[in-house]
Length: 576
Ligand code: COA
Image (cartoon, rainbow, N blue to C red):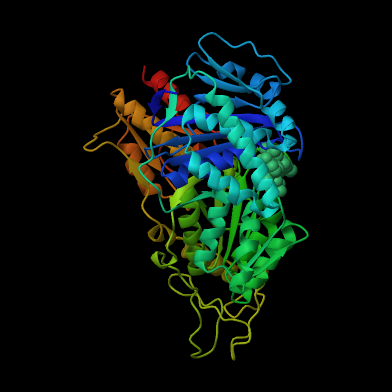
């Protein structure tokens, strides 16, 4: 069986929720990564536990990957619905592996390479109907050269908890799938490139990576209420935090979880919660209290399609307004956003460091795409991270919890410290924490609390400018945030290869906005474009409000992320 080696291959698996689509995607991803390939995945599944369309896309390459790619080279359709959902993307040159005989009889478009595989039939014949997905995976491993030894290892490892019979049954179905595909003539050109060699990497989702980052930062206390797509952060933390002596609570709702987090923070602990848009909305009152009482806390918001219950399992970047300004009164907070799985680890540590140093809430924005996407990242060494602890009282003189210091940061004490008794309250208060509503005091205290935030910009890396060496003024500059950055990175590479003079600007600190860095970037571009996955152009709004720049908005909100091709086409259109 031969094919043209493609160093950047995208395989999309589609089927019904409950048929094991997600498992196949995970297994292929793990096998490719452990064999030494770079991987980036994307998945979308129905809000129902069983039924509905589930999709998993694996991109694997011998080169560095930044996003899930454009469309697929190979489609594996478990049923008619999956085939029909992707029918429009079956362009000449793509390959399709499908269940036959199955619940559908596809009319294959001209130029598409088709491989009928009796997935359901074979699994039933083997008295193991659940293993339909393993038959499909076996067939794909032969057709597209997916590292077979790694796949066998992953099957054995992943099903081990279900017992030896399940492992053996699935391995047998996998081998049967390979036999079935071996009997077919390879007619498409796609074959995965050969990996450089086994790598010491972990394959993590964005949600797990945030959990890992929190542990590296010294997390002591976690409380959250489950909500898609954020729940896996809590699941990851639940597995690891108690072993380190920390505490995790599944609270009765989001108001309770943020309240518990503030209580733990008052008690001297590093504390966090994770949620999605509707949960963040419920937390807004307590975020005001965290700012007022100067309690460090990290709130992770894994954004999903909204408003309201919205599109719970779909991708959107639409909580920026809420993150920055959601709350009553003048309530400040720090807002960071992550680009990649690697960032999910690193910026979570930064979020804790900022929360502890500036004694205020730090909101870390992730999104539905990153939450479930997996990527290989080098195994992180906790010793490589700089971890900040809060400023504590040295016990000298009279303790003033809210002392009006030059930088606005005043010392904290853990409860029980002799001489350190104080009140942490949502009421306006004086330097020792007693309620005080005089206008002079309120103005001095607001000034103190916001004065602190002026230092934040010096504690985060400068915004990355993505420009070719020696690039002068660009014809177009792209500003991107969150997971859209990875898409823009690849689009810029393609555009430069076509001769376009384009640059990228990738802020991770969104509040306070690094205004001077924005201005400098704007000055180096003739025009600016700001693609983001929300209806209103939320970051573009803030950029227009806080800087002299007037970026053009490019917004989508169909529940899916941008693809590099969409950005490339938009730029070509603008610069035509
Ligand atoms: N043999 C034995 N077990 C198998 C198997 C096989 N060959 N293939 C898959 N399975 C198991 C998986 O291990 C998994 O078990 P687990 O849940 O105990 O881990 C289960 O079957 C489901 O398979 P999986 O591949 O993980 O998912 P799927 O592609 O069948 O899709 C989901 C199911 C994930 C879409 C669905 O269950 C779900 O969770 N939907 C989302 C619900 C949600 O979040 N709603 C939002 C509410 S606001």
